[in-house]
Image 1 (cartoon, helix red, strand yellow):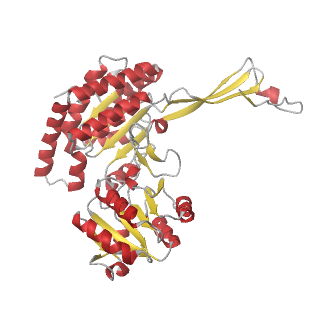
Image 2 (cartoon, one colour):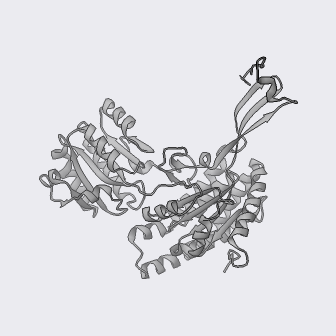
Image 3 (tube, one colour):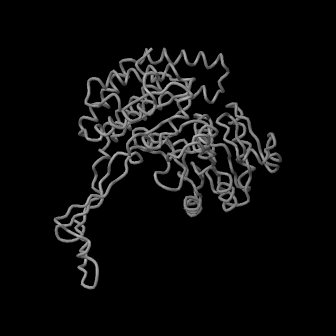
Length: 434
């Protein structure tokens, strides 16, 4: 169908060509990179009907093959979702340049100058299930940050990905960005090969189910940015406003249940449970949410029993487990035991309790009186995200441009040698910030 086939070249050669193109991309001016991003946005806008048709073909195949509802929801590209993604591309274009920022400018001694300067990572390997819009987001972020990218979409999105890739490649012809900086793989076998390219790929970014991400993490020596689980919690404190609690619970669960930032467990303080649980249970059931609860919940509402496994499960569906807690401290302990360090929230009018929750819950995102669904690069003003990281080391949370650059130290002197600063009569450094 396209020039995306890699049969004529080994994946090693593909990666080396991508790396070389990425080096040239990193040297382009910010105007040249932004022009490429606008060209992509315009081309996608012009081809919306064609893209939707390709996606509909994928969706029809997915239905015939029994793709799970959460994955199907991620696969489906409505015109609204596509236009929002294109808007995100343009938002990336207006963000500041992340490349070439001088973070440290220091005179170590007269004529001996140290700079720490941001630079692209190099080549990204991005593997994703469903989510064809991820191809658009990641490509745009890669170009803006001066990185090459090798993309591998799931087989369920093959037509969507190939069409999107062709649109982007055709758009890049009219720009300064070498098309070799963006590559698309199409077969499952290539995943294993990609994971072995530790000399040519600098970072692997997986986006998909927890089993999928775990597989990627366990089968490569390349650094991996991602999260395996999205077990998010909402805690309704004894001093919560019930109207706020109901609205936020509903949004956090049903606005898009397949998202990794949708809640899977609702924790409720025992003092407010008798008033809150009957109301929220009615609303959730009206929205076809299956509820599972502990013994205390079962005494207050008609609910299926929850098991230990429920507290560990990312449903990605209209299923919610509920647990009554005796205290804020118990709720925090539950979250830190069963959570995946993704996003957790508290509903309370008590600022002291809110502060304690925000400080003590161990997660990349910790919210007060708002939906966990705000945990998203687009909503954070990043334009888009390449994924969400739950690791402790940066980058953490939704990863935009700042997570796709590293830095290097540059030192300039004038015949300076270390011997001058060593021994009994060593000269001292000035270390004066400039």
